[in-house]
Length: 210
Image (cartoon, rainbow, N blue to C red; front, side, top):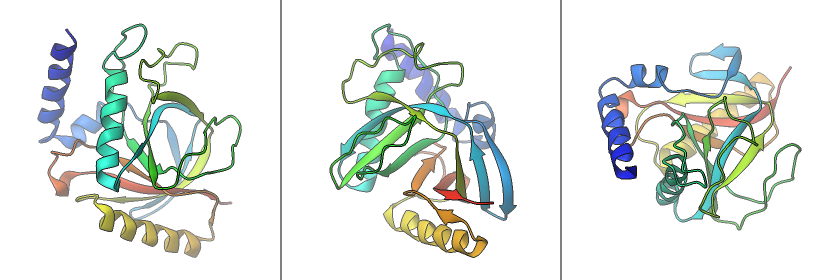
């Protein structure tokens, strides 16, 4: 049964390779409001949201794959109630460095060199109604409402591309007078087999902006 569901999801995602814009439109994303836009740069206000996350070690790309597999197991029914959870976008990845705890986020410090990978949960769920993960390395966290400076780009999101876009985002945020308040994160909206020119990737950083 589980393999059938996974096969159906994979088939659906494969078909999305050729219609990524339609696939994204049909996939739930965290709610946000665009406060400012200049080309590929946006200032967004995100509402509070829930995420399933795991922390993994490895290089940037292999850690992303490990984290994806761990959380995919949870949403494919690897939870105490064996309930499948709809896939959402984007998948988030950030360095899992020690950070200050900010209510209502419950984030534990992680070793240097590891990566935090998150899937945002569908809005219909609350902390109480989300199934409990079977995998102890997967946990549910509450993310507060935040403002993000976001820079969108297509193509492959390898280490070099992400680093270049993150540097560009920092420079443009400074030009806009936005104060960076946290570490950068990368958001991936498409499966890895999507043609690079058709992919939607974003680097984002929390900011304080008037």
